[in-house]
Length: 149
Ligand code: SF4
Ligand code: SF4
Image 1 (cartoon, rainbow, N blue to C red):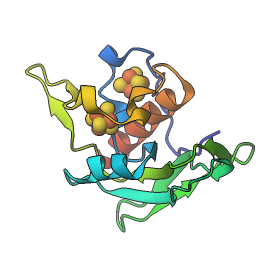
Image 2 (tube, rainbow, N blue to C red):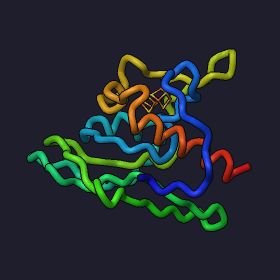
Image 3 (cartoon, rainbow, N blue to C red):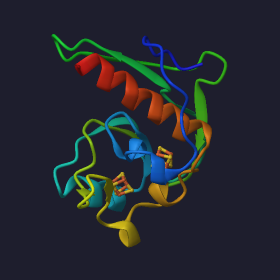
Protein backbone atom coordinates (compact mmCIF):
# COMPACT_ATOMS: atom_id res chain seq x y z
CA UNK A 1 0.00 0.00 0.00
CA UNK A 2 1.20 3.56 -0.63
CA UNK A 3 2.47 5.27 2.47
CA UNK A 4 0.43 8.38 3.06
CA UNK A 5 0.49 9.85 6.57
CA UNK A 6 -2.99 11.42 6.84
CA UNK A 7 -6.47 9.77 7.10
CA UNK A 8 -8.40 10.46 3.91
CA UNK A 9 -11.97 10.41 2.64
CA UNK A 10 -13.19 8.00 -0.03
CA UNK A 11 -11.97 8.70 -3.58
CA UNK A 12 -14.44 9.25 -6.44
CA UNK A 13 -14.60 7.37 -9.75
CA UNK A 14 -15.82 10.25 -11.90
CA UNK A 15 -13.61 12.97 -13.39
CA UNK A 16 -16.55 15.39 -13.15
CA UNK A 17 -16.38 15.12 -9.36
CA UNK A 18 -12.61 15.44 -9.14
CA UNK A 19 -10.35 18.47 -9.31
CA UNK A 20 -7.96 16.93 -11.84
CA UNK A 21 -6.04 15.05 -9.17
CA UNK A 22 -4.07 13.12 -11.76
CA UNK A 23 -2.69 16.33 -13.28
CA UNK A 24 -0.97 17.46 -10.10
CA UNK A 25 2.35 17.24 -8.39
CA UNK A 26 3.60 13.71 -7.67
CA UNK A 27 1.86 12.09 -10.62
CA UNK A 28 4.05 9.40 -12.20
CA UNK A 29 4.31 9.56 -16.00
CA UNK A 30 5.86 7.23 -18.55
CA UNK A 31 6.91 9.62 -21.32
CA UNK A 32 8.94 9.63 -24.52
CA UNK A 33 11.60 12.31 -24.98
CA UNK A 34 9.16 14.16 -27.25
CA UNK A 35 6.48 14.07 -24.55
CA UNK A 36 9.01 15.28 -21.97
CA UNK A 37 9.71 18.25 -24.26
CA UNK A 38 5.95 18.86 -24.62
CA UNK A 39 5.47 18.84 -20.85
CA UNK A 40 8.51 20.92 -19.93
CA UNK A 41 8.13 23.63 -22.60
CA UNK A 42 5.46 25.33 -20.50
CA UNK A 43 7.52 25.15 -17.29
CA UNK A 44 6.51 21.76 -15.89
CA UNK A 45 9.26 20.24 -13.71
CA UNK A 46 9.85 16.50 -14.09
CA UNK A 47 12.00 14.40 -11.78
CA UNK A 48 13.58 11.47 -13.61
CA UNK A 49 12.98 8.03 -12.12
CA UNK A 50 14.15 5.96 -15.12
CA UNK A 51 15.59 7.32 -18.38
CA UNK A 52 14.22 6.11 -21.75
CA UNK A 53 15.95 3.11 -23.31
CA UNK A 54 15.57 1.52 -26.76
CA UNK A 55 14.63 -1.74 -25.01
CA UNK A 56 11.55 -2.42 -22.87
CA UNK A 57 12.16 -3.19 -19.19
CA UNK A 58 10.09 -5.50 -17.08
CA UNK A 59 11.30 -4.24 -13.70
CA UNK A 60 11.61 -0.46 -13.81
CA UNK A 61 11.25 1.25 -10.38
CA UNK A 62 7.82 2.73 -9.68
CA UNK A 63 7.33 5.10 -6.69
CA UNK A 64 3.85 4.85 -5.14
CA UNK A 65 3.74 7.15 -2.19
CA UNK A 66 5.47 10.07 -0.64
CA UNK A 67 5.96 12.14 2.44
CA UNK A 68 7.13 15.68 2.38
CA UNK A 69 8.44 18.10 4.92
CA UNK A 70 6.72 21.42 4.36
CA UNK A 71 9.44 23.27 6.31
CA UNK A 72 12.35 22.06 4.20
CA UNK A 73 10.44 21.07 1.05
CA UNK A 74 12.16 17.69 1.18
CA UNK A 75 10.20 14.87 -0.48
CA UNK A 76 10.73 11.18 0.21
CA UNK A 77 9.28 8.69 -2.24
CA UNK A 78 8.31 5.14 -1.30
CA UNK A 79 7.75 1.99 -3.25
CA UNK A 80 5.19 -0.69 -2.51
CA UNK A 81 7.39 -3.47 -1.05
CA UNK A 82 5.22 -6.08 -2.76
CA UNK A 83 5.26 -4.31 -6.10
CA UNK A 84 8.27 -1.96 -6.29
CA UNK A 85 8.53 -2.06 -10.08
CA UNK A 86 6.34 -1.89 -13.17
CA UNK A 87 7.12 -2.65 -16.80
CA UNK A 88 8.33 0.24 -18.93
CA UNK A 89 7.99 0.28 -22.73
CA UNK A 90 10.88 0.84 -25.10
CA UNK A 91 11.71 4.53 -25.65
CA UNK A 92 9.76 5.60 -22.57
CA UNK A 93 11.21 7.01 -19.36
CA UNK A 94 9.47 7.30 -16.00
CA UNK A 95 9.11 10.70 -14.34
CA UNK A 96 7.47 12.37 -11.34
CA UNK A 97 5.71 15.67 -12.02
CA UNK A 98 6.92 18.10 -9.35
CA UNK A 99 4.26 20.77 -9.85
CA UNK A 100 0.59 20.93 -10.78
CA UNK A 101 0.53 20.64 -14.56
CA UNK A 102 0.94 23.99 -16.28
CA UNK A 103 -1.55 22.87 -18.94
CA UNK A 104 -4.41 22.94 -16.42
CA UNK A 105 -6.99 25.63 -17.13
CA UNK A 106 -9.76 26.83 -14.81
CA UNK A 107 -13.31 27.23 -16.19
CA UNK A 108 -15.88 29.80 -15.10
CA UNK A 109 -17.17 27.49 -12.37
CA UNK A 110 -13.73 27.05 -10.85
CA UNK A 111 -13.16 23.52 -12.18
CA UNK A 112 -9.79 22.71 -13.65
CA UNK A 113 -9.41 20.89 -16.96
CA UNK A 114 -6.65 19.94 -19.35
CA UNK A 115 -6.07 22.84 -21.73
CA UNK A 116 -4.40 20.59 -24.33
CA UNK A 117 -6.79 17.66 -24.19
CA UNK A 118 -6.37 16.59 -27.84
CA UNK A 119 -2.57 16.83 -27.66
CA UNK A 120 -1.97 15.44 -24.17
CA UNK A 121 0.70 12.74 -23.75
CA UNK A 122 -0.21 9.08 -24.07
CA UNK A 123 0.18 8.60 -20.32
CA UNK A 124 -2.60 11.14 -19.78
CA UNK A 125 -4.80 9.56 -22.47
CA UNK A 126 -4.40 6.09 -20.98
CA UNK A 127 -4.93 7.09 -17.35
CA UNK A 128 -7.70 4.88 -15.99
CA UNK A 129 -10.62 6.80 -14.47
CA UNK A 130 -11.50 5.04 -11.22
CA UNK A 131 -8.38 2.85 -11.27
CA UNK A 132 -5.81 2.33 -8.52
CA UNK A 133 -3.60 5.19 -9.70
CA UNK A 134 -6.60 7.50 -10.02
CA UNK A 135 -7.52 6.82 -6.38
CA UNK A 136 -3.91 7.17 -5.27
CA UNK A 137 -3.61 10.57 -6.92
CA UNK A 138 -6.80 11.75 -5.24
CA UNK A 139 -5.44 10.61 -1.87
CA UNK A 140 -2.17 12.42 -2.48
CA UNK A 141 -4.07 15.57 -3.47
CA UNK A 142 -6.17 15.40 -0.28
CA UNK A 143 -3.12 14.72 1.87
CA UNK A 144 -1.34 17.72 0.42
CA UNK A 145 -4.39 19.97 0.88
CA UNK A 146 -4.63 18.96 4.53
CA UNK A 147 -0.87 19.28 5.02
CA UNK A 148 -0.81 22.78 3.51
CA UNK A 149 -3.92 24.01 5.40
S1 SF4 B 1 -8.86 10.10 -13.80
FE1 SF4 B 1 -9.22 10.01 -11.58
S2 SF4 B 1 -7.76 11.44 -10.67
FE2 SF4 B 1 -7.91 11.94 -12.86
S3 SF4 B 1 -9.50 13.55 -12.98
FE3 SF4 B 1 -10.50 11.57 -13.31
S4 SF4 B 1 -11.25 10.95 -11.29
FE4 SF4 B 1 -9.68 12.55 -10.97
S1 SF4 C 1 -1.22 17.44 -20.11
FE1 SF4 C 1 -3.36 17.70 -19.54
S2 SF4 C 1 -4.06 15.66 -18.92
FE2 SF4 C 1 -1.80 15.66 -18.89
S3 SF4 C 1 -1.23 16.17 -16.79
FE3 SF4 C 1 -1.28 18.08 -17.96
S4 SF4 C 1 -3.34 18.93 -17.67
FE4 SF4 C 1 -3.37 16.76 -17.07
